[in-house]
Length: 212
Image 1 (cartoon, rainbow, N blue to C red):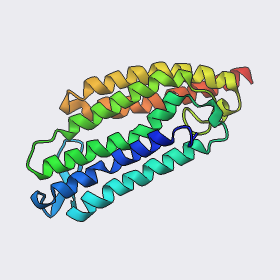
Image 2: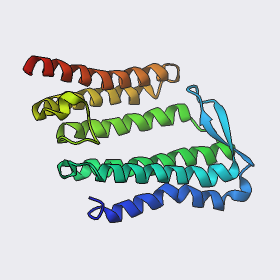
Image 3: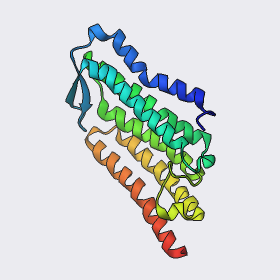
Image 4: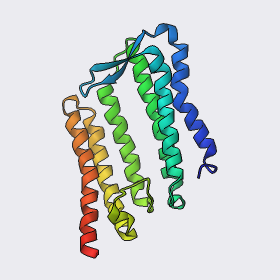
């Protein structure tokens, strides 16, 4: 899996640390403290030093990216992976790195950054993409609804993921729409996520109890 996707892994890794290069270009224009955390209302409540924000955060994101890539590739059932699903894994951290660091630099330079809109929108789009591919996921230990009842029964896995695909797609639409309503964004984000996680697990257990 690693050799087959080596080119994509290299490119995605470079993209993950691109914000570091942008930070070096903007270095003299950036303040000594950069905003690196926002609350749910979009208010900055966390700051980091310029060296940490510019250098360390992209490197941390790169570390997460490589860990996710290697862990996914080491899955005993990696032969069951759909290349498109693996591609999603490869691009989550790079896109998140670009998104977060762009917001950090923009806010540091005085631009009005609507993080309370951007992050839910990103999550909704990501969940929508994942929801579209969940029904196509075959049994594995890395991607999907990985609980004992799905891992021990292929039919349980398939039915649970068909349901999960529908729920994740519906939930992601709610999250995307909710991003446009600032006052409700907490509810339109966390409630759908809870439903997306819990309902497939309950369904899987009920199916197990019925067919064991």
